[in-house]
Length: 297
Ligand code: G1P
Image 1 (cartoon, rainbow, N blue to C red):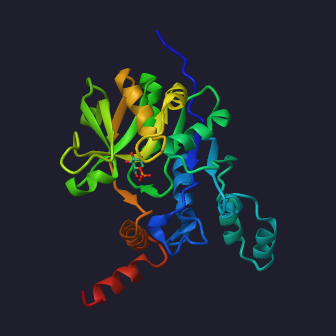
Image 2: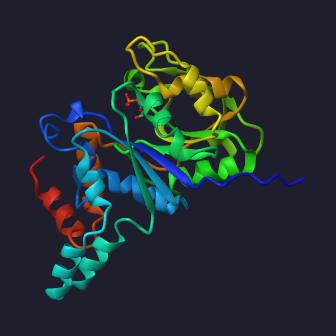
Image 3: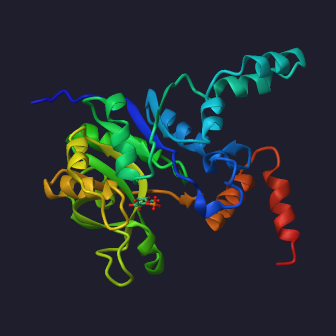
């Protein structure tokens, strides 16, 4: 028997956060606009959406975030200026930023947590499965992380989240899963059945070494769970609480990402991502490598 599932067409990108981990750079500038080499952080997430077949990106935004909207908007003056100077390749690059994607914006007026940000997008998402991507995380690897989650959803009809191995002392900064091996599938050991999750466990109490990376594909039922979620200890509605409800229903998979995860919302993570992407840059990567080798480290 074949079931027709609704396609995952939409992605929610919560971008209302104040970026306090990156002060002072983020005092007057959204952290999502910090450039890693030559692209703002948020563009990497939108490119992952494009590579995953997403058609509609919903930004959950806030005050002082207009630069994000401008970045994904048309820029006719800039394009014609570049064309008039014979810089048609650059004009093309500017045109392609939005990748033919449809963009919507909604505002999260209070900083009530990631679960609340997702709930804010409910009306724009409607009654269909959707992806969530945290824009300060850049996922690298042979297959776009969100694409893998969508494939898992398509085959099973259940929610899926990306996880990664995390150093013990770092687990306190993550949602951490309690999971078991999934029955045989084409994802092999990379697919796990989630039984429970703990958000930011106290040192020594984490149920595993697998932290939630910031990529989710969720069925619309998650909204019902989030609506019932009361703000937790820090006064926030956690997405993790909604995920726990899915897991308790036996409706949540975890996929161990095949590739690197860069937490570029953190200063050190940002620097590492910058160096790795710069080394791969076709026009100056080789020169940059030579420069790094010459540094007296
Ligand atoms: C959020 C989630 C957490 C996840 C993390 C990944 O936390 O609540 O479960 O592991 O993103 O970056 P935040 O980093 O926003 O505090």
